[in-house]
Image (cartoon, rainbow, N blue to C red; front, side, top):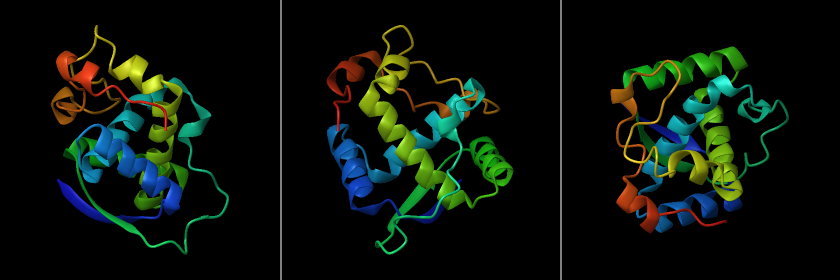
Length: 152
């Protein structure tokens, strides 16, 4: 299911997202999709960064980035549930998801977990989401070496 949304990531967030899209030869929509699936895969690890911060929205004045997020019904249901549990809008959750994903790329967490040759080519395990909903989110082992993320 596809859904259009406007994300406010600020100039830095937009530039970092564009850099990742260019680096991996993906669209911005696809990078956000991968970020959302990565977030869902991290839900059970107890990581505090997965919670959307309660402080103000720093980029409210910046022009929004319009994306079309294409996810399976189970993934959408899980994201709606997470947003409701955190008392936030789905768009705000996705903005936070993008920032967490960019931070994980920068720190090497995504490289270690997703691009590991032992797991490359297999769908990521996402809590509450059937494997077919995330198929394609993990690069194949041949493309993983060619598309390995570099620090921002």
